[in-house]
Image 1: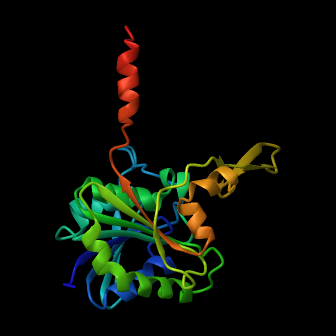
Image 2: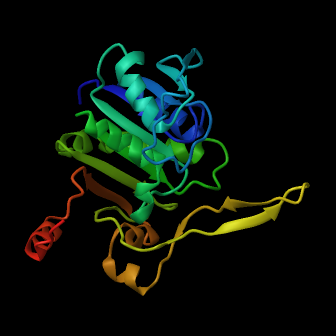
Image 3: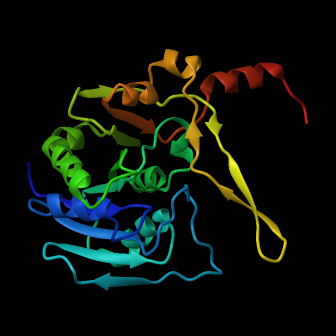
Length: 259
């Protein structure tokens, strides 16, 4: 495979072991630039910083073969600012990750990692979202292993990305046992729960716990990404930009609604 110009982005910060491990592995063959938030911004989705909060970036010289730029914005800010002002040339590929939690099913809509990859796709650049079940990882051992497997299959993955399509890849905790499944995103409700607490001044406030997708019989029968991750398969889900439901357009037209 020829050497690629790759932009790395994430939602957990520019020094998170997931993105640093990916940079270390990929930079042995490719030109790698990290453009990522300075601080963790999990669950930021496709949000962008508005005109009332100016963006800034800073370069860090801590890696030999990869450049690191931090941005005081969201993952999508990083992609757009990186393309417009930070990078000297347009990358061949944008990789968002490695995230420490799987982004599957309905969580793709709130995920900053998936949204950053989609932002790259919107700009006409091949993009991949890369996530893993590494919430309990200590150090970079698990991330380095995932990065090596990803690099091994990058030539095939790069070639299969079609215009308007983002690849959403998830690694289970024990990914060496089985193989890869090309599958769809599971359609199942999110179990969003909030923890209620009271501060020293008597004011009640709430913390959002990590959104968890229910794994009931309905989700099981779908045989989607959630199902195969539970079976320890690596899942690859192609996501398209066009979210229009064509069938509903026909239904609405036939309803002959008059305003």
